[in-house]
Amino acid sequence: MSLLGHVHQLSEVIGPRGSTTEGEAKASDYVQRQLSALGLRPERQLVLSATSAYAPFILASGASLLGLLLFWQPQPVGAAAACIIGVTAFASTLLELTFTSNPLRWVIPTGWGNNVSAVVPAAMQDAKRPPVLITAHLDTHRTPLLFSSPGWRRIFRTIMPAGLAGMAALNVLFGAGIFSNDQALRQIALIPGTVVAVIFLLMLQAAASPFTNGANDNASGVAVTLALVERLTRQPLQHRDVIVVFTACEEVGAYGADTFMSAHRRNLRGAIHLVIDHVGGLRGRDFGPSIIRSERFLRRVECDPRLVQIAESVARAQPELRATVRDFDLAYSELSVGAKHGLRSLGIIGLTPEGDLPNWHVRDDVIANINEATLERTVEFAWCLLRAIDVEEMG
Image 1: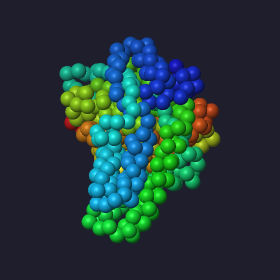
Image 2 (image 1 turned 90 degrees about the horizontal axis):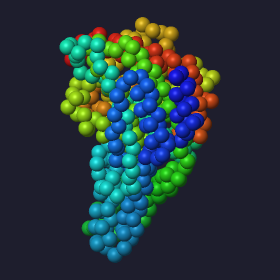
Image 3 (image 1 turned 90 degrees about the vertical axis):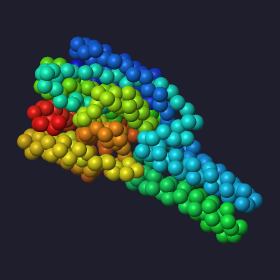
Image 4 (image 1 turned 45 degrees about the vertical axis):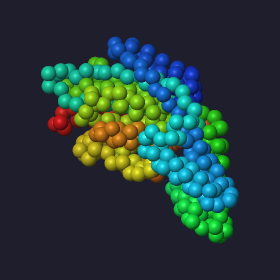
């Protein structure tokens, strides 16, 4: 099937594919059928996941607001209770932002998704090197107000630091209130409390918004990965098995990638991790794929320097593919999870020349806005990159 054919099946025939929903399950079934048709033996893996990207932050900001309410109660008991609740919420948020288990995950709603994986063996099994792991997520995000326009996206970039700062400030005031009955502390607490309240309301709105069709994010990445698998079945790498994983539940905290990497830690020792995400471009704009050398969500995660060098060499050798090297500062991808598990990671994401993500978490993320030429360039670049990695002696 063609690249746009895969995008059509996922984004239009199946449609929205929210994490743990029936749509995501149908997408898992679809890629399993495609892999089987290529003569591979796909495997499914259950993924226990949060059902909402925003539930942890609703809970954390709500807990901080509860702490603010308690702060106005008789002291020092109210301040002590507020401090305990606020510190727990703040610490849990930091852990959530680094894809780490925390108390928020113990109480938010959960559901089941399915990873679908397959292995394309290396041609030379007696001279193998660590494998290449390719991940592309199946699920789609909601369409929050925070993503609805460039202005709102600029606000989105300040939400996390503003929220964390507000929660931290409240905790400092709560702690001070244990030892002081000064009414001014309560008055001052209303300032960061207002910031946290605004974030609480924005998270509620986001959690209630509809799911996107996800043509670009990430039917495009799934289509490119399926095209690569088809080529690999005809021309496998010489020295490296290629493990492809179509992951569930990326949009709510990368649960699918984390589950797969945790379960296959031994087999992935020394592996190269290639993330393919949001690579469909934008109709009417002619640009190529972006090589991601680092990304930043809570903290900056650096990609493997040697992989970046190889990717840069491929880009120079194939200028017609218009690949550029970029830092990704808008959000997280599964690249951060690969780095968490010690893999040698590199991302391919379709940033615009201005550094934005086309049709990101909006209702316009439909196949009519995909650029087929950008998809084709991404396939060619990823294919050249895989061959270059295969011939490099990287351990």
